[in-house]
Image (cartoon, rainbow, N blue to C red):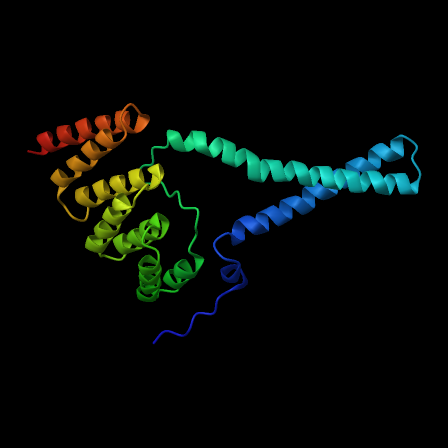
Length: 222
């Protein structure tokens, strides 16, 4: 039996731990820069000690406000536009959750326990695409492509599934059919599905190109 896994500080913080640490570090550094800049401006203008301290505080606050806008506002504004044209490939991994607990188990060689944890999360969250996509990837690498296929199908059936998750699931199914499942003919409907589901989009255009290429490859093989 594998020894119990002790959750680290980062595990307790949750999947956003890396982002929280980066934000804290950047906040500290940018705040120091802002404080030094404010103090320098005050000193050059001939301010007294209290004036210098006051400007340092103002510089720190302004720097923190700028960082907040950069981290919280700008990505949300740009993310919507990017997602509208997102076209993930088999090498894309657009997960916002890192599932550090399960990945730590897998790195220790306890893939079975990691997959068990994934299955518990899957059962508890019937509309969570991220956990299904991540679990499917682990099933693919651990030699269970059938379960991976089931999970990718579940992602496709989630009501109002995010576009990027839906497209990624379809392309990973294509990879499965052309690879470990050795049934490339079943990959064709995946491209047709994307064409019908996302008309007049970059997704449709690239799916048509991929469909034509796959048909050509299959005809050549025959």
